[in-house]
Image (tube, rainbow, N blue to C red; front, side, top):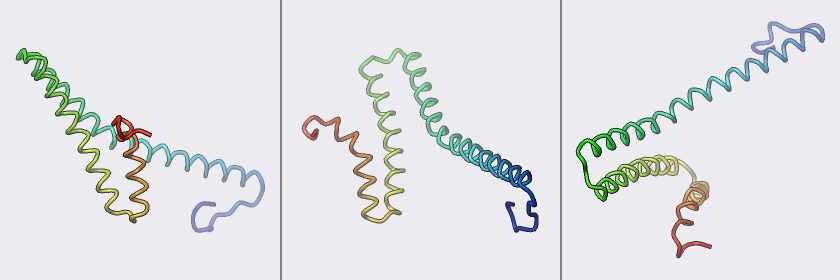
Length: 120
């Protein structure tokens, strides 16, 4: 049984039911934790989308020139990415140097590949 062992099964049918209940409980907890994590991670993306929508509305209402619109959107995107980089930096600060180096390399590969003279 799950718990202190004060309730035990006596035959195969009870054991099968125990296993099914344990699997069901494990799946329920996995779903619950996954849902909570999904809500937390979606919050940042939702904030960014709302900010971008507000910016687009202001730009359209005020007939802002296209080059300035691009600059504003680029700035907002860069600011969003820098928030992501701050999260990575906070994570790396708590890791051992070897693991931190591996993580930084894994994260930076996609950015390095975008710079033509750093490829390969």
